[in-house]
Image (cartoon, rainbow, N blue to C red):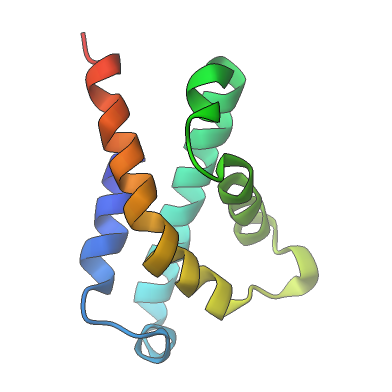
Length: 105
């Protein structure tokens, strides 16, 4: 999760929604990394519900992953994805990175 958060942050520096939409590969990379994050949170929720509950908006993140992966509603709202990247991802990254010392041997 931390790695995917970092990749998205690095790939979107200086970008706007419009510029991201014009770059198919960037859009696909962002969406793929959001899927990875959501899948990891889904697995964390199954294996360690208490830790997962400490992640802000865990259910919404998993829901976004499901929409991206399964194409619910036949279309992804690009503005919603971009807002998640710009507004929610930095907080998620900080929360995930804060958990890492707890899981290292």
